[in-house]
Amino acid sequence: MKFDTGNKDMKINHDFVNQKLNKNTSTCFIYNGLDRVNSNLLHDYYNVMPCCPSCNFAKRNLELHIFLDWMSRIKDNYNNLLQKINLFESK
Image (cartoon, rainbow, N blue to C red; front, top):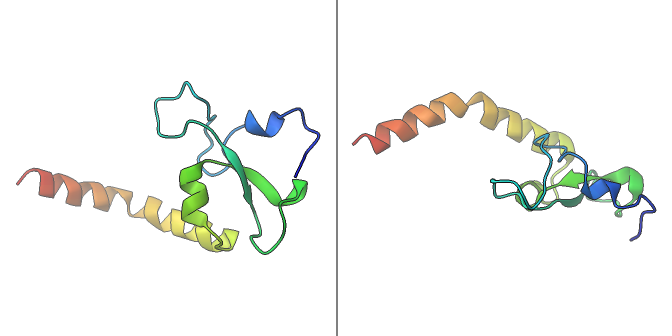
């Protein structure tokens, strides 16, 4: 698969976490690739989005709206999770 984009896709924000990904970051995201929006279709310019390996693995072949709903539920429960973690760590 080749896109005539001058590698611009590898230099734009990761679509799921809205963060530029490069080798200078302090997070686990050291590069990004291209994930298919619709996993039933081929890698095509209009069917891919920038994505780090962690999000690509988490999404796997889920439909995009199901993956985004899952991410939303994690975000909504974030504070509860932190409280539980802090409770366990304080023991």
